[in-house]
Image (cartoon, rainbow over all chains, first blue to last red; front, side, top):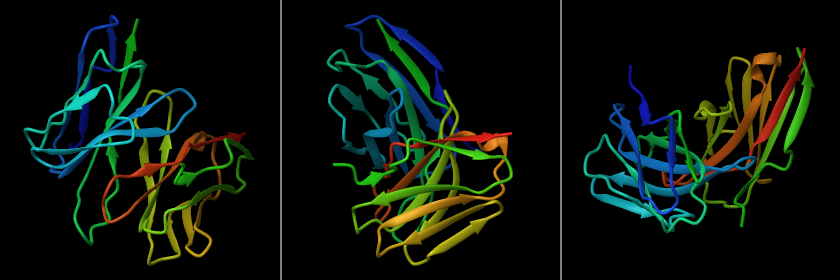
Length: 115
Length: 111
Protein backbone atom coordinates (compact mmCIF):
# COMPACT_ATOMS: atom_id res chain seq x y z
CA UNK A 1 0.00 0.00 0.00
CA UNK A 2 1.27 3.43 -0.88
CA UNK A 3 1.53 6.00 1.81
CA UNK A 4 3.58 8.33 3.96
CA UNK A 5 5.53 6.98 6.91
CA UNK A 6 6.62 9.19 9.75
CA UNK A 7 8.85 7.85 12.47
CA UNK A 8 8.96 7.70 15.36
CA UNK A 9 5.41 8.30 16.59
CA UNK A 10 6.64 9.81 19.87
CA UNK A 11 10.01 11.47 20.46
CA UNK A 12 11.50 12.89 23.64
CA UNK A 13 14.57 15.11 23.75
CA UNK A 14 16.41 17.30 26.19
CA UNK A 15 16.58 21.00 25.57
CA UNK A 16 19.65 21.98 23.55
CA UNK A 17 19.73 18.81 21.46
CA UNK A 18 19.04 18.66 17.74
CA UNK A 19 16.58 16.01 16.63
CA UNK A 20 15.66 14.68 13.18
CA UNK A 21 12.15 13.55 12.23
CA UNK A 22 11.86 11.05 9.42
CA UNK A 23 9.36 11.20 6.54
CA UNK A 24 9.27 8.67 3.71
CA UNK A 25 6.68 8.34 0.92
CA UNK A 26 6.19 5.68 -1.74
CA UNK A 27 3.47 7.52 -3.65
CA UNK A 28 5.91 8.83 -6.26
CA UNK A 29 4.87 12.36 -5.33
CA UNK A 30 7.01 15.29 -6.37
CA UNK A 31 6.21 17.74 -3.59
CA UNK A 32 6.65 17.20 0.14
CA UNK A 33 5.75 19.42 3.09
CA UNK A 34 6.30 19.76 6.82
CA UNK A 35 3.61 21.28 9.03
CA UNK A 36 3.44 21.89 12.74
CA UNK A 37 0.28 21.73 14.85
CA UNK A 38 0.04 23.16 18.35
CA UNK A 39 -2.85 22.38 20.73
CA UNK A 40 -6.07 24.03 19.57
CA UNK A 41 -4.43 25.52 16.51
CA UNK A 42 -4.33 24.87 12.80
CA UNK A 43 -1.48 23.63 10.66
CA UNK A 44 1.45 25.96 10.05
CA UNK A 45 3.89 25.38 7.21
CA UNK A 46 7.55 24.93 8.16
CA UNK A 47 9.24 23.93 4.88
CA UNK A 48 8.25 22.48 1.54
CA UNK A 49 10.05 20.94 -1.40
CA UNK A 50 8.71 20.62 -4.93
CA UNK A 51 11.66 18.79 -6.41
CA UNK A 52 14.76 16.92 -5.30
CA UNK A 53 17.59 19.13 -4.03
CA UNK A 54 15.32 22.16 -3.73
CA UNK A 55 13.19 23.44 -0.85
CA UNK A 56 11.56 26.65 0.34
CA UNK A 57 10.89 28.14 3.74
CA UNK A 58 7.34 28.24 4.99
CA UNK A 59 5.80 30.59 7.53
CA UNK A 60 7.71 29.31 10.57
CA UNK A 61 11.06 28.00 9.28
CA UNK A 62 13.26 29.56 11.96
CA UNK A 63 15.00 26.89 14.06
CA UNK A 64 14.34 24.12 11.53
CA UNK A 65 16.29 22.64 8.63
CA UNK A 66 15.45 20.12 5.90
CA UNK A 67 17.07 18.19 3.08
CA UNK A 68 15.67 16.57 -0.07
CA UNK A 69 18.35 14.27 -1.44
CA UNK A 70 15.86 11.65 -2.63
CA UNK A 71 12.34 12.00 -4.02
CA UNK A 72 11.01 9.62 -1.38
CA UNK A 73 12.51 11.27 1.68
CA UNK A 74 12.17 14.68 3.35
CA UNK A 75 13.68 14.66 6.87
CA UNK A 76 13.14 17.60 9.22
CA UNK A 77 15.74 18.61 11.80
CA UNK A 78 14.55 20.56 14.82
CA UNK A 79 17.57 22.49 16.03
CA UNK A 80 18.34 23.88 19.46
CA UNK A 81 17.58 27.32 18.02
CA UNK A 82 13.86 26.51 17.84
CA UNK A 83 12.41 28.24 20.89
CA UNK A 84 9.25 26.16 21.31
CA UNK A 85 9.92 22.78 19.70
CA UNK A 86 7.31 20.75 21.58
CA UNK A 87 4.52 20.13 19.06
CA UNK A 88 2.87 17.63 16.72
CA UNK A 89 4.73 17.47 13.40
CA UNK A 90 3.03 16.39 10.18
CA UNK A 91 4.63 15.45 6.89
CA UNK A 92 2.62 15.52 3.65
CA UNK A 93 3.10 15.00 -0.06
CA UNK A 94 1.30 15.64 -3.34
CA UNK A 95 1.68 15.51 -7.09
CA UNK A 96 2.39 18.92 -8.50
CA UNK A 97 2.33 20.71 -11.78
CA UNK A 98 0.13 22.99 -13.76
CA UNK A 99 -3.29 21.61 -14.39
CA UNK A 100 -3.06 18.94 -11.74
CA UNK A 101 -5.45 19.31 -8.83
CA UNK A 102 -4.07 16.86 -6.31
CA UNK A 103 -4.74 16.81 -2.58
CA UNK A 104 -2.12 16.66 0.13
CA UNK A 105 -1.70 13.24 1.68
CA UNK A 106 -0.51 13.21 5.29
CA UNK A 107 1.47 10.86 7.46
CA UNK A 108 0.30 10.04 10.97
CA UNK A 109 2.58 12.56 12.61
CA UNK A 110 5.36 12.65 15.19
CA UNK A 111 4.75 14.13 18.61
CA UNK A 112 7.96 15.76 19.83
CA UNK A 113 8.38 16.65 23.48
CA UNK A 114 11.40 18.67 24.56
CA UNK A 115 12.11 19.10 28.27
CA UNK B 1 -2.62 37.74 8.20
CA UNK B 2 -4.92 34.72 8.00
CA UNK B 3 -5.61 33.90 4.37
CA UNK B 4 -8.01 31.08 5.25
CA UNK B 5 -10.50 31.57 8.05
CA UNK B 6 -12.90 29.26 9.85
CA UNK B 7 -14.81 31.53 12.17
CA UNK B 8 -16.64 28.83 14.11
CA UNK B 9 -14.27 27.01 16.49
CA UNK B 10 -16.93 24.42 17.25
CA UNK B 11 -20.28 23.09 16.04
CA UNK B 12 -22.73 20.62 17.57
CA UNK B 13 -25.30 18.79 15.47
CA UNK B 14 -27.85 16.08 16.17
CA UNK B 15 -27.28 12.70 14.53
CA UNK B 16 -29.13 12.44 11.22
CA UNK B 17 -29.26 16.21 10.66
CA UNK B 18 -27.14 18.32 8.33
CA UNK B 19 -23.75 19.68 9.40
CA UNK B 20 -22.59 22.85 7.65
CA UNK B 21 -19.01 23.96 8.10
CA UNK B 22 -17.92 27.30 6.71
CA UNK B 23 -14.66 28.72 5.42
CA UNK B 24 -13.67 32.13 4.08
CA UNK B 25 -10.52 33.11 2.20
CA UNK B 26 -8.90 36.36 1.21
CA UNK B 27 -6.47 35.42 -1.57
CA UNK B 28 -8.22 35.61 -4.95
CA UNK B 29 -5.34 33.63 -6.52
CA UNK B 30 -6.42 30.42 -4.75
CA UNK B 31 -7.70 27.97 -7.36
CA UNK B 32 -8.10 24.70 -5.48
CA UNK B 33 -9.87 24.16 -2.18
CA UNK B 34 -9.92 21.14 0.10
CA UNK B 35 -11.53 19.82 3.27
CA UNK B 36 -9.76 17.53 5.73
CA UNK B 37 -10.95 15.63 8.77
CA UNK B 38 -8.63 15.10 11.71
CA UNK B 39 -8.72 12.97 14.84
CA UNK B 40 -6.37 13.69 17.77
CA UNK B 41 -2.80 12.39 17.37
CA UNK B 42 -3.42 11.40 13.74
CA UNK B 43 -2.70 12.98 10.39
CA UNK B 44 -5.52 14.80 8.57
CA UNK B 45 -7.55 12.70 6.15
CA UNK B 46 -8.56 14.19 2.82
CA UNK B 47 -12.36 14.37 2.41
CA UNK B 48 -13.29 16.33 -0.67
CA UNK B 49 -12.00 19.12 -2.88
CA UNK B 50 -13.20 21.60 -5.46
CA UNK B 51 -11.54 23.47 -8.28
CA UNK B 52 -12.21 27.18 -8.73
CA UNK B 53 -13.91 26.48 -12.07
CA UNK B 54 -16.74 24.67 -10.28
CA UNK B 55 -19.28 25.75 -7.69
CA UNK B 56 -20.25 22.36 -6.30
CA UNK B 57 -18.71 18.95 -5.81
CA UNK B 58 -20.41 15.97 -4.23
CA UNK B 59 -19.08 12.69 -2.85
CA UNK B 60 -21.53 10.53 -0.96
CA UNK B 61 -22.64 12.32 2.20
CA UNK B 62 -20.21 15.19 1.61
CA UNK B 63 -20.83 18.21 -0.62
CA UNK B 64 -18.60 21.24 -0.98
CA UNK B 65 -19.97 24.53 -2.30
CA UNK B 66 -17.78 27.36 -3.59
CA UNK B 67 -18.90 30.98 -3.93
CA UNK B 68 -15.97 32.76 -5.58
CA UNK B 69 -17.52 36.21 -5.53
CA UNK B 70 -17.94 35.96 -1.76
CA UNK B 71 -14.64 34.07 -1.31
CA UNK B 72 -16.56 31.51 0.70
CA UNK B 73 -16.84 27.76 0.72
CA UNK B 74 -18.84 25.36 2.82
CA UNK B 75 -18.89 21.65 3.56
CA UNK B 76 -22.27 19.95 4.00
CA UNK B 77 -22.49 16.55 5.66
CA UNK B 78 -25.85 14.80 5.28
CA UNK B 79 -26.85 12.85 7.28
CA UNK B 80 -24.42 13.49 10.11
CA UNK B 81 -23.17 10.45 12.01
CA UNK B 82 -21.41 10.16 15.39
CA UNK B 83 -18.27 8.97 13.56
CA UNK B 84 -18.12 12.35 11.85
CA UNK B 85 -17.13 13.96 15.15
CA UNK B 86 -13.65 15.37 14.54
CA UNK B 87 -11.85 18.60 13.69
CA UNK B 88 -12.40 19.77 10.12
CA UNK B 89 -9.83 21.88 8.31
CA UNK B 90 -10.39 23.94 5.21
CA UNK B 91 -7.33 24.42 2.95
CA UNK B 92 -6.55 26.35 -0.21
CA UNK B 93 -3.73 26.54 -2.72
CA UNK B 94 -2.81 28.38 -5.88
CA UNK B 95 -1.20 26.79 -8.92
CA UNK B 96 -0.13 23.77 -6.89
CA UNK B 97 2.04 25.81 -4.54
CA UNK B 98 1.96 25.61 -0.76
CA UNK B 99 -1.31 24.75 0.90
CA UNK B 100 -2.75 27.19 3.45
CA UNK B 101 -4.94 25.80 6.22
CA UNK B 102 -7.64 27.37 8.35
CA UNK B 103 -7.62 26.99 12.14
CA UNK B 104 -10.23 24.22 12.10
CA UNK B 105 -13.78 23.64 13.36
CA UNK B 106 -14.52 20.94 15.93
CA UNK B 107 -17.69 19.08 14.95
CA UNK B 108 -19.59 17.10 17.56
CA UNK B 109 -22.41 14.88 16.33
CA UNK B 110 -24.70 14.02 19.20
CA UNK B 111 -26.56 10.68 19.23
